Amino acid sequence: MSYENIKIEKSLYTTGKSFTQALEKLDPSENYKGTELEGLDAYERQLKRFNIKVSGKDCDTVSKFFQTSDSAVLFPEFVSRSIKLGMRDNCTIDNMLATTTYVDSLDYRSLQLDETDDMKTFDIVPEGSAFEEVKIGVKSDLTSLKKYGKMISASYEAIKFQKLDLFSLALRRIGENLVHYETYDIIGSVNPNAFNQIKYADEFTYDDLVDLYTSLMPYKLTTIVADPKSYTRLLKLPELRDANAGLDFHATGRAITPFGAEVYCLSELSENTMYAFDKNYAFERVVASDVSTDFDKLIDRQIERATVSIIVGFTNVFPKAVKIFKKKEG
Image (cartoon, rainbow, N blue to C red; front, side):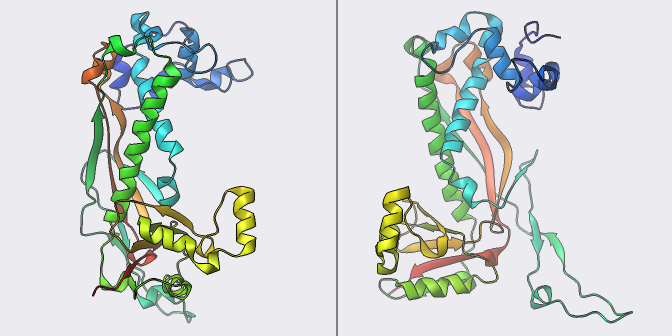
């Protein structure tokens, strides 16, 4: 079947797969190897079929999607892709995750590995002797999944003559804001027990950061999330402002950071608080529903009543891979 003969129907959004996956089943990309359409996915081929240009000098307006009933069905996927693009642009969250798990239920328990002293040592096992056990189980607590979303408030009449690349820009901004609050939810998955807190007096110094760095071992300090005050203090430390650091900043735009860790500022954090962790082991992202849209409303041009949402949660897989660095109270 040619991509030009596929019947585009609303039912493609209700197959249990993504819209693009449903299209790919009808029109596999592997059939286009060696042709001018190689490199396009099934959705992009449909845009070509209906001559819808979503960017560039000859970018179309929103109304182009609604010239036929078939092309109108492509519009919700355009909305979803634009929002996902904004989420990818603000890739902070990707730099904090060890893994992402997709589930089809709101009840989920992550794995748990008992990090006892026995787990960290490997003794020689004499012939015939038993091996020491390393227990892998599931956590006692469920991972809390939350729905994030927004209702789009824009009538079709107001946006139908807007260029698609400009409309996409607004949707991308929604995606960026969405993923920002996911970042805050990551921090919320950390249990603030005494064992994972490192406290300093008054203003922290570089020596305090060294203590923080060593306290994470055998994990590595790859990432720091700080409140605005701590972020400012961090970048102003004399040890991070030497001449070579300045030259590198002016040449590349990258500020020098403690031990090469990625540093992010999160305004919602409590003042004088930083989270330091090993991104390779600290957090798991659990997705029950990827970006979804009210496809019926979008197809029927009821855009002012359409919602976009995502259901996600986070769990701190290895609690000892995270340290909370904060000022002493009192």
